[in-house]
Length: 185
Image 1 (cartoon, rainbow, N blue to C red):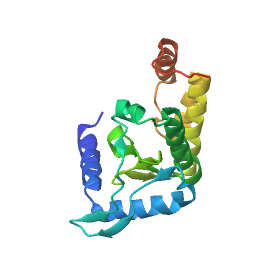
Image 2: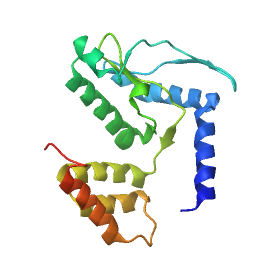
Image 3: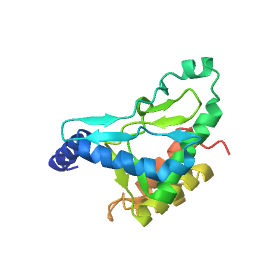
Image 4: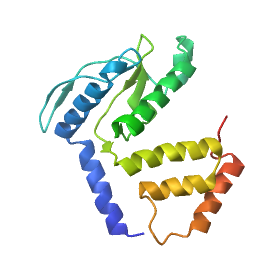
């Protein structure tokens, strides 16, 4: 591990998070791509952006951090989980443009039950190999197939050429065997 490389990458990521012009551009693009899916998904519209300020639409929601409140309000959590999976599969597979900061604080459910995605400071454009590789990783997880998962990692370009396949396969298989990564299919 090269600590200076890690530090440099962390600096880039942190500064991207406060680049309001970039976040505005990403939010506009996301809304354009997902406009046809507005019956089950929304993101705040961008009204204005400068280097110091970002003005966006107010979209009230219950944070996905508050799962008990979501259930108490009678929202269908399975439908919400399906919407989240669908949103990310579209981002990975169709648009190759995805919000890479999908923690529960950036996700909510609005009064109509739509999934709301906030915060477009961390957005990534995928290459064809990355997009296809992510979908293959998902397939490999569903199938609990460590070899297919390793092949998908290679396709995505996330492994160095000199990586020890045996060690990676052992970790993947152990995660599958212990239930750290599991499939319900």
